Length: 159
Image (cartoon, rainbow, N blue to C red; front, top):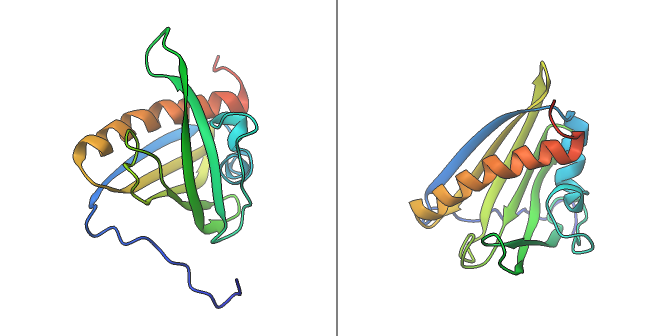
């Protein structure tokens, strides 16, 4: 890849559903940027599953592991994507592809904007490109929980 190669952004016209989540995070902008570009296994991905280089157009892979209900066996959930835009400590934009229970194989786009906030960082997340409202709504609910878990994993339990 050269500096003149275009970044191929997914065409979302046939998948118009999107969500936005904002959260005041205790973690610093630098810590959050690193978490989204180099340290997915610190807060979200299963340890040892991350293959990721923080470069525009670079592909990545990781897995999450969780039980769908208490007492059920933990199952693996692969995530694939590539970085579209990176502005250190300010912006991460990436594609996000998961299976049937996630994005249904659609290449969605997650944009994470970071800005100063009195307690640490304001994180503004947009996730676009869902086929339907049900998938969007499920992800919106999940992102609230994921971001709360992210902040706790990066800074420790809230007092």
